[in-house]
Length: 417
RNA sequence: GUGGGUAUAGUCAAGUGGUUAAGACAGCGGGUUGUGGUUCCGCCAUGCAUGGGUUCGAACCCCAUUACCCACCCCA
Image 1 (tube, protein in one colour):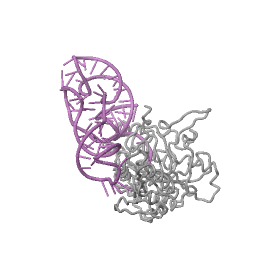
Image 2 (cartoon, chains in turn yellow, green):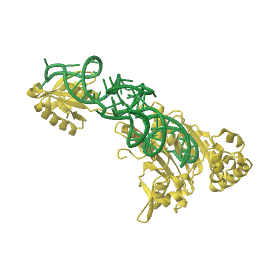
Image 3 (spheres, chains in turn orange, brown):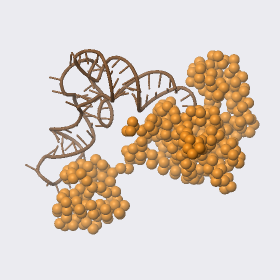
């Protein structure tokens, strides 16, 4: 047990951390182009924030949160990124700033679920949020950023699906219409759909059971019951996506599992990484700030699962360059040479080079072998001959060429390609 | 929470009741102390997830436990 990480967690080892650096840098760069600034919030919050933000009746709040009591406070490890950012926005009165405000983040999230492919208990998300505009142009930009990032990562075969889940008014009207439609066929639905009838009837529409699919054919669709404002907003969004030349499909089955969503809902989905194929999901949340006790500030954003992103890149055969290997390895023979080697190693490191020496007292042949296997670009050889002449031999490990330079010229010699 | 699968070295594995548990890759050492990627030689599981049981005898059969994987629910 002591030598096992907890269920649903994963170590990111030095042999793969370069992939994380790659996607993290790329995401920060895309966000910079879109004018987003990074925000960092704590890894835990007051439990109440998520109860109010994500919603008391959601699965996340009801059974997936890591919650504990301390000093008479109930605290919870962040299960998602949006609520904390909205909290920070309200707390620091950032609504007093020039609007809109655009944030991005790279955070660990925690949910107590049964792990499977693409799902961990401790996982990581990139996310962005735009506050202060209800213009669909913002939604289109948010989707565009996600799309550009996914493309830049070399991923193919990911589909953008969009939907509108309306505002609280048109959604509650629609729920009643849908329940009226489902009532006569309730007894024929599968067991999970029966339980969905009260909790989330919209889910029944994309049940995987073929029998249920037949039954719900011809069911009323949310899109047809949007109020005028929501309907116009959805049309605006589609127009803007088309204007930006971003392909999408309208999927009335998209129902986000977090209560705060309004109007726009979207997902980027792949079928190459197993059942958990939603790499990125997001939408608009116009009432969240108010729900948390802040002013009525509209918002829109997304969360993007980093583990799922990496899985998808892998499935797509994307190769990320692994920048490993020292600039130079110093091979030495004898104690005098070792001392000169250590002196030069330090000098070169201070000059900015990645330099290594053998510290297992290997013979020359094995020092070379080590230099080769760890990917050193050059090997610097120091023995009795070199010490006598105050020179070193530099061998290029790719071409195999060797040359001799004076000890004092070693930095310049390494700068040459 | 429900269901299914797997567990032999750092990794991939053969072995499915009978003497010292194949093999490959990786690692380490060496081929007469000055040169790697090739080649050759040597070393590397009294041990088969853990704990019981059956048996003259168990990696192999039985029971329990644990871990990991996959799927449902739901989500990133």
